[in-house]
Structures are given as structure tokens and as C-alpha cells.
Image (cartoon, rainbow, N blue to C red; front, side, top):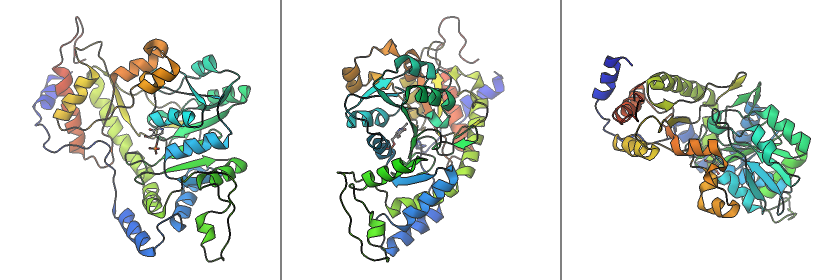
Length: 407
Ligand SMILES: Cc1ncc(COP(=O)(O)O)c(C=O)c1O
């Protein structure tokens, strides 16, 4: 690389304040809406949840939507509504957050892992084919970091084996695949509005589906199994009794969360545009470093740019991923790890008895991945701080024999 450029990064002063990873951008419209919600007295599930649902329906094009209190709840409801339980298997990727597999165990079914593609970090359809059995009832692909999975291939496998597809769309608000939004690409989808996501409500989630029967079951399951939800019971159209038709769950979203979600969703497109700018700057800056940058988005898809993950080339330099995390922390840069492989986590290791090498691509990523800040709150100066810190750390790492550190 150009020596002047390298020197400018090396000599850039260390940032003074800690850059919090994934800090959400909450603006005045959210604050005003929250205050109005509190003043209105309707702080449970009410008119703002309805508004948020309508807006999400319009945005994604899904026929049915239901706001819930987390993506975990949404995934759990999907499995229960599909009647998945003991003796059943559900295929997912081991490169995901714990919740994706945890919910499979919550319903008494067995998670079955299929390795990822090393470029896309998404579940590899060929690996799904390899592990599918007559006991498989569903596949849960994760649109990792906001990159659409190969849904044509996944849906083809699912229909050949008569199994359901549940999109884990936790990262995928704004992801588009062949002209259709995430949330409309399988049988049911689950979104997350956790504090670091592209749309935040504190905690929160959304179920989307085009199947009216599943939608109705999920609605009933999400609120104690009651035949009528609170919004209808207490509205001005007159008191209505409810019946308990199932021992359901307490998964409803409240108007306080929806108050944030309504305005967050309004800004999603402009936020993705800003994330794209940051992404492009990172891509350009890291060309010279011993890291693998994310692959370009696949043709006819839109990546939602939720997470910017780098793979540290630990074969080229004498440094571990954790060394880089610690060094970034010392540089006042917050980071994330998405993810350490799930098949190596104690619970899943004990349950399924996998060896690390059973999923070589997941293992490769698990040992190398770091996520650097990509929030819309970042200023251009913040971005340069992140880049400079990574240059300092990686250019001072000793190259392994015969490999130059800075490319
Ligand atoms: C891939 C994935 N699935 C599921 C979840 C669970 O989402 P929530 O925290 O909204 O329950 C997350 C949360 O980070 C996630 O990243």
C-alpha cells in the first residue's frame, strides 16, 4: 500500500471517547411519540402496535404481520404454530445467535446443523440436502448480517421434502431477494428489533407470513391463547368476553415499543443508504489489510447492511481474533462477534456431540470474525478512527513466515 496512507493511519491520534458498538439512533420523532404514548394512557398493546404492524405490512409486502416482544418469541411461535415438537428435527446454521437453535429445543425438537457457505456466511443448500431426514419438519435459514439466503434453492429442497421454511430475519429488515422483501420468502419469518438492529424498539420482534391460518394461530398463541386480544376486548366497540383456546404465551408488543418502531421504520431506507456508504468506505480501506472483507451482495438482491464482519487472516499474521478485539477495545473502539460457532457451545456440544471440524466453514469464520461499528450514528471521523485503529493493530502484527502484513 501507499506509504503516506499507511503513515497517516499510524499517526492518527487514538480516539478519546469509547465508540459504543451498535448504539441505536433515537431521534425526536421517537421521543415525541413515546411521550404521547405515555400521556395517552394506552401503554399496553393498542393503537400504536396496530400502526406499526400496518406500516411493516406495507413495507415488506407480507399479507399478515404480528408484532411481538422479540424475534426469539416470533421464532418460537412459528415452530409451535407449525406443530413442531418432540421427535422432529429442524435444520439451521451453527453460525447464528443462540436463540435460533434454543427455540428448537424449547419445543422439544432437535436442532440439526448444516454448514455455511464460506463466502456468504449463509446456510449452504447443499449441506441442507446432506442432513435432511424424514424427521425434518422445518428449515430455519438466517439472512446473515442482512445478506439474503439462497431462497430459491432452500425453498426447492423444502418443497421436495415437504418441510416448512422459517426465515430468521433478525438481521434482515430491508433485505430484498429477487424483488421480494425478507419476510415474504418462506412460510413464516421472524424479525428482531433488539437495540442494535436496523430497526430498534428496545426489544421487539415481528412475525410475517402469507398464510392466513398460520397467522391466526400465531396471533392466538402470542397472547395466552385467548380468542380476542386486549385491543379488541377494551375498545369502544363494547365489552367482549374471551375464551381460552390454548395455553398460549405472553409475547405481545406494547405501544411503547411500537412508538419507537413506527419512526424507526420510516427512516429504514435512508439508514440503509447511510450504512451502504460506511460499508463502501470500509471495503475500500481494508483492501490492503490481512483481512477478508464481506463478499459483494449477490445479483438481484439488496443486502440490508446490518453487520459489517471482517475475517482476520490469522494464517497470514501472528495474531488471534481475540487479540484484535482486545486491541480495538484499547483503541476505544467497541466491537461485536457474530458469532462463535453454536455447535461448539457447551449445551449444543453436549446435546449433539459434534466435533469442531464437523462444520469446517463455520469453524473457519468462528475463529476469525469480528464486527466493527456500522451504526447510522457514526460520523465520518468515527469511521476513520475505526480504520486507523485496525491499521495500527494489523500492521504491527508480525507476518507469518513469507507473508507480508500489509498487502
Ligand atoms: C440471527 C438472530 N436470530 C435471533 C435473534 C433473537 O432476537 P431477539 O433478541 O429479538 O429475540 C437474534 C438477536 O440478536 C439474532 O441475531
